[in-house]
Amino acid sequence: MNIRRRLQNLECRPFRRPVVQRDDQWILPADECKKMRDLQKKLCLPLPDESTSEERSHALSLARAAQLIDGESGWLLVRDFALGLHTKYQSDFER
Image (cartoon, rainbow, N blue to C red):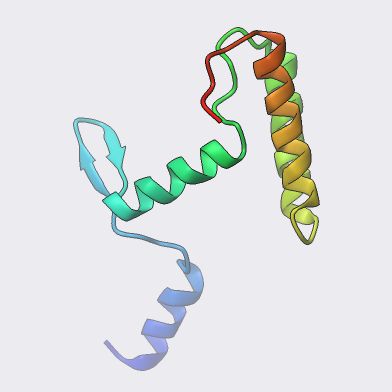
């Protein structure tokens, strides 16, 4: 494969990571799983099962807005909202 084609592939798929598929379940490599779990704990995710669809959609809109904001302030809003839901529904979330 020539260098131009390799560069085009990298530009089109810059975030592609090796993923294993077993029985229709996508499994990330072990280090990626640990990173995702740490990020979930930091953001107080997943949301409680009792949360309504409106609350979930609001959390999603906060997360989308946080991607556009530089720094951590947007993600702190997501964390505070999720923590508020855990408090409201008295879930057994581990901090």
